[in-house]
Amino acid sequence: MKSKFGEIFRQTREAVEKSSSPAQVEVLEKIAEVMIAALRSGHKLLLCGNGGSAADSQHIAAEFIGRFKRERQSLAAIALTTDTSILTAIGNDYSYEQIFSRQVEGLGAKGDILIALSTSGNSKNVLEAVKAAKARGIFTVGFTGLGGGALKSSVDLCFQAQADYTPHIQEVHITALHALSEVVEDQVVFQK
Image 1 (cartoon, helix red, strand yellow):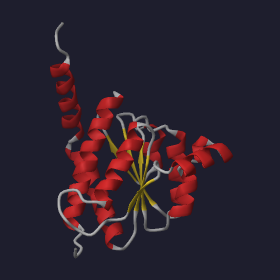
Image 2 (cartoon, one colour):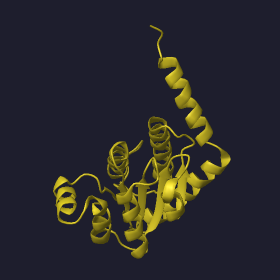
Image 3 (cartoon, helix red, strand yellow):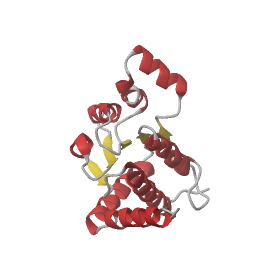
């Protein structure tokens, strides 16, 4: 049996390479600028997504609350994917489509940033979170795949992984989110 590992890694490298075009890097630079300004002014990041994107939301919130590469003051970030009591209560009492939007209403404030992850760009609960954020004057950032879905035109800035296969989209997203974590951490200087 011939190993598929080499081909899988090649496809991942290709997706990352295509996603690091000057246009996409420019989007990431703009996202970093907005994040830096928000965090410097005492605002927070709210992150949401489903499945692997939920895990990425938690992962990146942890990078900001803890640290990415160096010791520094904690930076405000909340993954809206983590509180099972909130998620199940909203899902049961309202609908699954509102599990993130209700949290944005309760936790978000003007000046914050919502980072919405959806590989398809069409996750209804993520799109509802974007609507709720916009209603509160919260800046919205999307992370999606090649087509972009409805998310692409719903957010203020959108990074699109140049892939249409969910695992590769997620691999590009975590690479981009790690890059943002490093750039933001380097620029948001606080005393320890």
